[in-house]
Figure 1: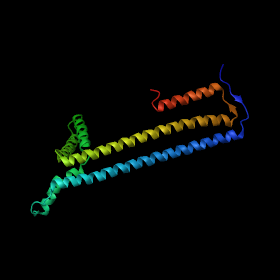
Figure 2: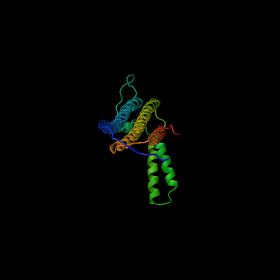
Figure 3: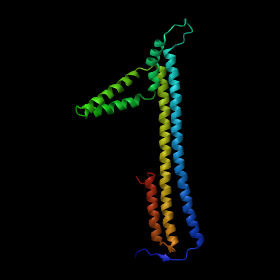
Length: 224
C-alpha cells in the first residue's frame, strides 16, 4: 500500500522552530563560505611571504658565493660594468628563477610536445623561439652553487607543504558545504510539510533519511 499524507494542526511553535532552523542553516552556510574565502586568502598570503623570504635567503647565498669574504686579501677594484656583469651572471638568475626549475622543466616538455604536433608554420616558428628562450632560462639554472641549491630545495618544500595544507583545508570546507546543503534540503522539505499541516508517514521519513545518509556517505568517500 502506498505512502499516505495525514493532515494535522501543527503547533505554531513547531513551525516557528522550523523556520528558525532554516535561518540558522542559511547563516551557517554564509559563515562557511566566508571562512573558505578567508582561508584561501590566508594561504595565498602565507605562500607569497614564504616565496618573498625565500628569495632573500637565496639572494644572500648567491651573493656570498659570488662575492666571497675578502678579509684575507686586499680589496680589489672593479668597474661598474664588471659588477653588473657579475650580478647578472652569478646572482640574478638564482633570484629571478628561484623555485622554478621544476616548472621550467614541465613547461619545456609541454612546449616540445606542442611543437611536435604543430605542422611547419609561423605558429611553429613562434613556439620554437619560445622554447629556445625557456631552454636558455633553464641553462642558467644548471649546476647551482650548493648553498643556493640547498636553500632553493628547502624553500620549495615549504611552498609545497603550504600548497598541500591549503588544498586540504579547501577540500574540508567543500565537504562541510555539501553537508550544509543536505541539511538545508532536508529542513526545507520538513518545513514545507509543516507549512501545509501535513505529517509525513514513517515510510516517507525513512526514504528521506536514506537519501540524506547516502548523499553524506558519498560526499565524504564513505560510499566508495
